[in-house]
Amino acid sequence: MSYAMEQPIASRASESARAGFIRRTYAHLAGAILAFAALELLFFQVFFPDQESATRFVRSIFGQPASMIVLLLLFIGVGWLASSWASSDVSRGLQYLGLSVYVVLEAIIFLPLLLIATYYVPNGQNIIPTAGILTLGMFAGLTVSVFVTGKDYSFLGPILSIGMLIALAVAIAGMLFGFTLGLLFSFAMVALASGYILYDTSNVIHHYRTDQHVAAALALFASVALLFYYILRILIQLSANGRD
Image (cartoon, rainbow, N blue to C red):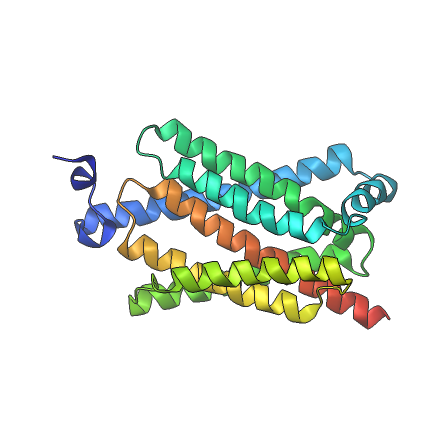
């Protein structure tokens, strides 16, 4: 009997096995989110305790015209690599390594934006928790809608991939032609991230095997991180526009 047959997909597993898989998936997702928050707190306390140290780092990142492209490529490339590790049938340790690497790299990717929110935006201390609450609220709403309806959103996969490629193309065009990626782009990315949450959640219900809770948690974490990033970006842009 094949390994895949021994570990059936969740939709064909027994009720107890399916429930256990879902609990493990969301427990690992919660752990990844808490680890991400702890890393950000550590980075702030150790490396960026004041505005001067933050300024040097932010300028080194956003002073480069290709910074947005690099960030998008990191979202895509690191996510693909970590997901392939987390989906591995060979080693559970490799699966956890993939999830751990992705959480650490996401924490690094987020640093410039969190520093801007903290040190350069009016009421920045409130913007970050507000973005977190909005992100968790949207995630919860989308998750509940998938579990209640039981709809399979796997058809969104190719659409979402094309959407991410379009976003990358827009970022490259912005670098080449000198226009900024404003609120419209950020709202479009929020919509894209919401689509990924629908897609990933339906995969948890319909397509992951009951032993793939690490891979499922990583996919969900990647989507939540993308959503949080652009909600935070929107709040920063709105705050900056209000100040002007």
